[in-house]
Image 1 (spheres, one colour):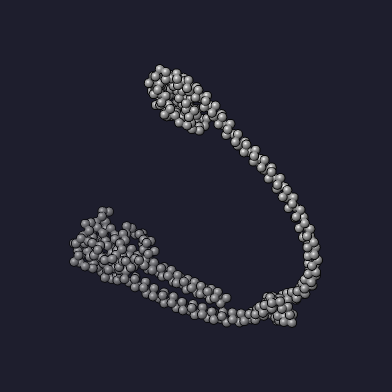
Image 2 (cartoon, rainbow, N blue to C red):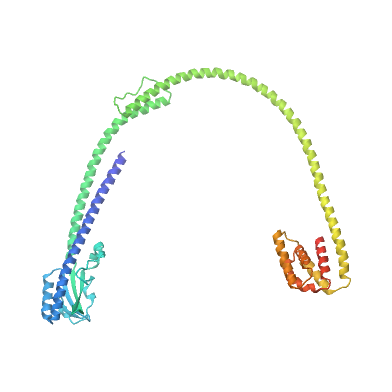
Length: 445
C-alpha cells in the first residue's frame, strides 16, 4: 500500500513539474514570437518609409541629402545596423555603415550570418517558419535583411537593403529564458517539498490504520490455524469491539467454528454407523465373489468349446480359399495359352504368305513395325479417339487405303505418334498383310 501511494505521489509530482515546464516553455515561445513580430512590424514600417524617401530623392537627383538621411536613421536606431542602396547593376550607391564599399558590387556574404526577407508590398508577413522555429533562427542568424525594390516612374531602378541586428532580441530572449528557468526551479522545489509533506502525513495515517487493522487480522490468522489443526475449542473465540468489516468477518469465523465442532461430532457418529454397514456389505460381497468365480469357470469351459468350433470353421474357409486361388491362375494360364496359339497360327500362315515372294519393301515395313511397337498405354476413350483421328487424317492426306483399319492397328500397337514416319514405308506391295502380321505377332509378345 505504501509503495502504491509513493508511486502515485511521485507520478503526480512528476506530472505537475512537467506541466509547469510545458506551460513556461509555451509562454516563452509566445513571448519570443511576439518579439519577432514586433521587430518585423517596426522594420516593415521603417523600410517602407525609407523606400518612399529614397524614391523621391532619386527622382529629384538629390543623392547627397538621401545619404545624410539614411545615415541619420541608421545612427538613431540601435537595431538597424546598416542601410544599403543598390542600383540596377547591384553596385553599392549608399552604404551607411561603410562608405568605402560604395561603387563596389554588392555581396550578401559581407553581411555575415543573415536571413533575407523580400518585401514586395506593405502587407508582407513574417514567414511562419521563423515563428515556429525561432530558436533555430536566433542560433543560425545574427541579422535580418529586408530587401525592397526601388522604382522610378514604375521602372525598376535598384534595391534598398536594411540590416537589423538580432543581438538585442537574443538578449531579451535569453533574459526571459533565465527568468523562466528560475521560476521553474523554484516551483520544482515547492512541488518536491509539498510531496514530502504529503508523503510523511500519508505514512503516519497508513501506519495507524494498518495497526488498527492488523490486530484482528492476526487473531483471525491464529484462529484459522487452530481450525486447520482440528482444534474446535470454543473457549478461545475472537473478540472484536469494532463494527467494521473485520468484526463481521470475525463473527463469521466464530460461527464457522461452532458449525465445524457440531459437524465433527455428527461425523463421528456417521463413521461408527458406516463401519457397521461396511462389515455387513463385505460379507455379502464375499458370497457374491464365490458365486462369480463358479460362473467364470463355467464360462471358460464354454469359451474353449466355441474357440475349437471357430478354428475348425476357419480352417475349412482357408482350404476353400487356397483351392480357389490355385484354380484362378491355372485358368488364366490356360486362356493365355489358347490366345497365344490362335495368334501364332494366324501369324504363321500370314508370315508364310508375306515372305514367299521375298520383297524388300515388305520386309522393311515389317521390321520397322516390330522395332517401334511398344506396350499399349492405358488411354481414356477420349484420348484413344483423338489419337485414332489424328492418324487417320495423316493417312488420308497420303492417299492410303484402309485408313480406318490401319489407324485402329496403330492405336493398339502404340504407334499413332509415329504415323508420319510410317507413311513412306506404305509403298510396299503387300503393306496391309504386313501390318496385320506384325500386329498379330505383337499380340503374342
